[in-house]
Length: 118
Image (cartoon, rainbow, N blue to C red; front, side, top):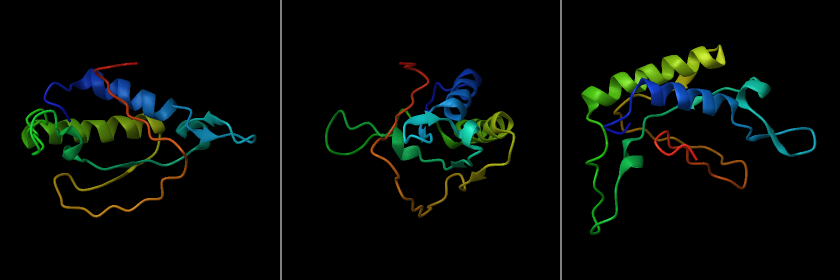
C-alpha cells in the first residue's frame, strides 16, 4: 500500500481485478475474467513493490505506507475482494517473511495502479 491509498483505491482495484479479462476462452484468447472462470485469488502483501530506485543504488521505501496504515488497508482490500468475488480468498500473512512460489502461466505481466487508471 502507498501512503495515499484509500477506500476508493480499494473499491476500484477489487472491481478491476475481478473483471479483468486475462484468462483464455475456448479459442485461447484472453477474454475471460476471474469472475467468468469462477477462479480463486491469493492476496499477498508485498511492500517491496513500492521501492523507489530513482536515486542511487539502495531502494527507498519512503512511499510505502507504515504498517499501522497499511494493515487496515490490506485487510479492507481482502474483505472487499471477498465480497466482489462472492467467495473466500486465500491470503499471506501481513508483514511476514514468506516464501511464495508460483507458475507464471502466460506471456504477460500486468501492473495495475489505482492512481494512474490507464
